[in-house]
Length: 225
Image (cartoon, rainbow, N blue to C red; front, top):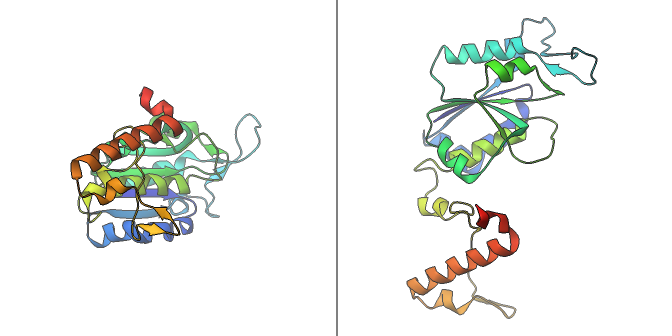
């Protein structure tokens, strides 16, 4: 999978995209993540990519030209399955959405900034808008990292134990059950006996029951889905 990220602040993405699982995926050749500075695609001599909004509203707006030039350049090199815009009013990122995106080959993610982007970009260039929650951030760089992480970790071979990803919270609309490790008794805080029993069928049933109980208590809306 290849993910191209368009941003005005590439330095914000350097560290999170080159650590841990994301770095491992790139080192293995399972994912290619390329960050592009939108200022490289402007014709403005001062490398500006924003301007005042028509109608007098406060704030600055990302211009259509550099975004169009960047996307056109990328599309001249390969086909893209999705051109995603990180937006607070987009579809809320979910595990099923991450699952489906992980099956694609090439994705572009546009990071919004300032007051937002010229709406013509959304009308003519964007194929999907994704939000990571009902709140507003300074820019779309952190949502782009979240989307990238959620998607890349699902690519076969990225995580050593692929069953680990399949048992994550939300994979089956349930929160994950409690997990424990050694020691089994710490300061009198004991691991449930069932997990030490060695009876896998009983353990699996306990985990399922715990997942349902935690979901009902903490995120009951998931059970409605």
